[in-house]
Length: 408
Image (cartoon, rainbow, N blue to C red; front, side):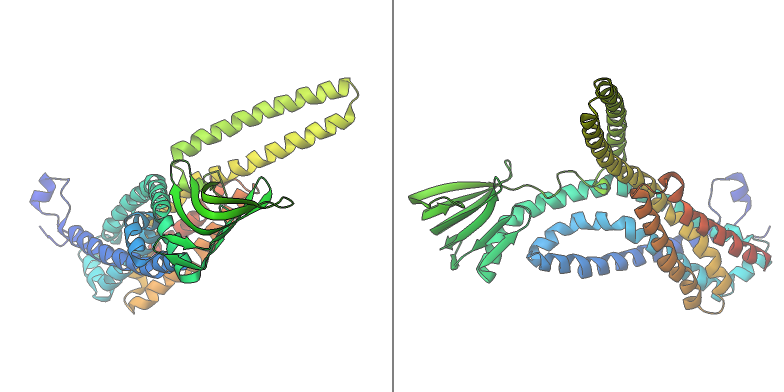
């Protein structure tokens, strides 16, 4: 019995055993995928993370401490690209070395040669979904905690080098004459409190962060505090002032939430909308009964504004769920498209087969996905079907190329 496809007597007795040829291809795909994924991830980490860290005042040591949390955050984006490049490399080389032709002449169906890549693509799709659903929210939480923990050091270092610091989140602006160790010399603080700008100046001050209360604690010595329209209040000795530091956006982004939490919030929004609609109907009935049309118009405007705000949040959450599933499945669909394209055109040159896959994906797939996501978040289209349009196009192209590979 021919063993070209790895089907020996032992294989027939043990149907679950992977044939030799498929095992060989699977090993090649795994080996190349691990190398490509490592290269892409390292490149993005050193180009993106360290650049952002430098711009935000973080030292290289701080950036290295964040890396264990940044890498899982990037994997859902690097894995599909690495999978596409891997199948282009492996199957392009198989086609270029005439191994595909030799296998077909031995009676092996071309689709069976693609099964290792499809199996790995399906496995990576499931893994990518878990990463995007569990690891990204976890890594974002860890990154925020670490950023807060090093914020005090970044603050002091920025003042030491630039003699000034501004933070949009707190609205705090600081100017100093010098920094002695961690002591600020002749500092001037400006921040907003109850809608008014507060100015504080002292001979020296020390700053620390209260992470539990999320406050900036400033201990000043010999200075004054000035409010707009008020006289200066001078003080001697030590005066402590606390500044509440709040995030610009109290609501967590949909991308930072697991699907289970998103589903719970969607149910809450739907329940609130139903309650508001009933409330609006009752208010309209009462206003019309009393001929109070001015109150009717005001109630309608207020309720409509609340419903529109919840509708925007609902659209973002709903789009995130469906886009997360669609983007995770892209690993499998990229393997489904990249394998036959590499076999079909890899005989001439690898670069051609890779560009035939990579350019449409970069210039077509992702722009289409981003455009559909934007429209879905705005409520113009439903994410239930729109998030899968790009994948359906990839499937159609795969079917077209697959026919050519099987026939020729």
